[in-house]
Length: 91
Image (cartoon, rainbow, N blue to C red; front, side):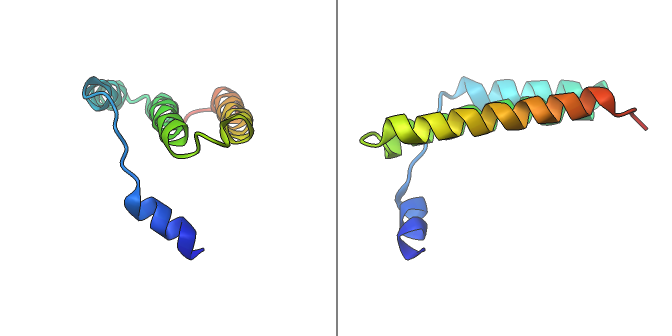
């Protein structure tokens, strides 16, 4: 467990400067339009991409295994969330 915390403390995430601005613009638009569920899915996609970048830089030697697990779990969570969003009436 200590190794995991050391890894988190030493990790640097480098993302393009435009991505947080685009995320902020999308989330503001979702809040203005009261589309909070869509905003959550948009935020999930952006954070998922940033995690993908982190995995590519951190686990380069074990990339195939982590990449497959990360992709399958990420896609599964997105599909389940989108399905739940569309099948639940909005209050």
